[in-house]
Length: 325
Image (cartoon, rainbow, N blue to C red; front, side, top):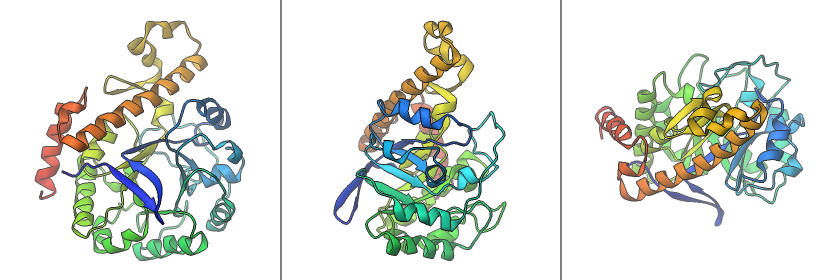
């Protein structure tokens, strides 16, 4: 079985436990992100993901990030681009500010927190580079901040390409130097099944090589995609979907419809109050989903997924056939 529960350590110190579902905070599409962090700081106790870009430009206050068990410090490539992730249905106009590797490194150098922090390697908003250079640059972060665990974020080698899974498998031994290896959902493949198969192939290659670091899927945090990628071998998931849509009974629901599907009392609420309640409920939904994932990893019983277990089981059969399992 590819799904698993994992405890991750860095220099003998505990960092995190998987499966890990990370609510993300970003100024891209959410100019009120500072208020969002303040609101959810009294609710969230698990991990979160924030970007070095938002810290640099003061969109998220560094001193307020003390409420979670672990922080993933993303490189800021998402905020610095004009493009969008798969869950962004609204696509508000976005004007990014200057963002370079030097600015990113400056934030990494001065980062201080009593909360365990995973630093994600740099994602350039404009430049593409080969896989070997991506790995080499990520390892340079180890020398700059030997006190912080580093995650290797893999990007396409050329614009419009997909993640080079075959090349990554050839470099599987290099992955053991990091606490996680990740890639964005939309850059992995053009279909959900294709993404699942590539995750499964990489996970099997890593297991065969004795490389136990978790796979992280960026931009995938919902009621369906997250468990699909989890049964394929991924362990860490983040995204902004929890701020855009409502989670209910195995479905990810359009915001305007979430109230009536969840509770008719929502009809009486102002939009802003309905959004606040939805975010809180979404976080608790993610906590329950994580419990289902843990139970599945322990038993292999798809019945632990209360709403979509039968569909997940059928999807897994397709992955088995196509990944040569």
